[in-house]
Amino acid sequence: MRIGILKETRFEDKRIALTPAGVHTLVEKGHSIFVEKDAGLQSKFTNDEFEKVGAKIVYSMEEAINRSELVLKVAPFTDEEAALLNPEQIVFSALHLFMRKKLVEIFLEKKITSIGFELVENEEGHLPILGAMSEIAGQMSIQIAARFLENNFDVSRGVLLGGIAGVAPAAVVILGAGTVGINAALAATGLGAQVVILDKDIQKLKRVEELLGKQVTTVVMNPYTIERGVKFADVLIGAVLIKGEKAPHVVTEAMVKSMKPGAVIIDVSIDQGGCIETSRPTTISNPVYIMHNVIHYCVPNIPAIVPRTASYGLNNIIVDYVQQIADLGIEGAMKSNVGLVSGVCTHNGSCTNEALAELFNLEYRRIHLFSKN
Image (cartoon, rainbow, N blue to C red):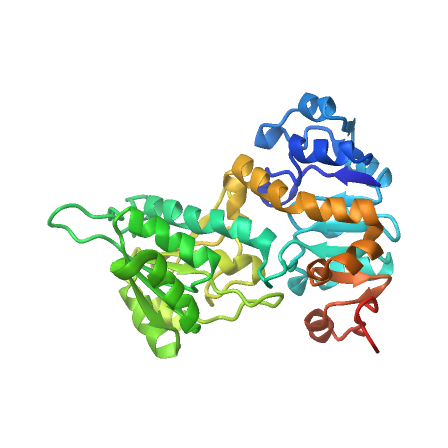
């Protein structure tokens, strides 16, 4: 199969979908790889490294797309990028289509098979590609919070995250005990912060206690406990995820108004709409704004801050899926891997994600490889 790897342009993203090691694996299987020139430079992979493992360097996004059957990238396609796609191509990237009706329409019109990183499942029903990026986002959220607790703005609290002898540490409140939340809790406790983590799922809270014991306070999440936690927080981490859907606003603007002046919000859910009512997307170069005397950090691609680590993490997970598609074709790969099917949002001109179809009032069609209808 002919596979194109695009250079990232959106949200100042510096990751790449496959490293030279991943490209080598695919070339050894007889597949042709076209890497857009300098696509790896931002994560410190040179064109020469890709050429040495058998990739062909091409000199524009258009050429990478036109020479490929399967197109790989990391960040969601912009509408302008999607307009360059050819009919019936396969795209594999983050999608987040629940906020992108026009992009869905482009995919449907061109009969694109679109597969979202954030929706692909493994045999246990987990989200392995999203999970790799969530590990990074969880750890990074605490590094970021520590930086913005410092005296950066007039409103800043000027607090050391871990405190010192005789001086209390910062209070970190985490909404959601999934991969982001657990990694944030691990990082925060490692630095000595006081950590409270909230989730509706008792089993997830038990998992936190198994990992961290009594270093972390676990609380069942409901409007009452959220309101109390928000008031208590020096740092509030929003890590609420509903698979394949827009994140719900679990923190209202009124709750944000009740927070300590200079408190820091890190809304990691912002790539799916945000779980805090006052959140709006920001960028790596301009990551924060202040509202109601609270510092908001709402960058939708936090792992892109460490693009080399993130690129390796992505490569390690997606190379097997890419090889399945390349070896078997999209139909064969879907037959052999039900988890891959869970990530397919559009196929053959139809919307194959039920929640997406309902949101945008589109006809929903199940992928008939597994349907008895």
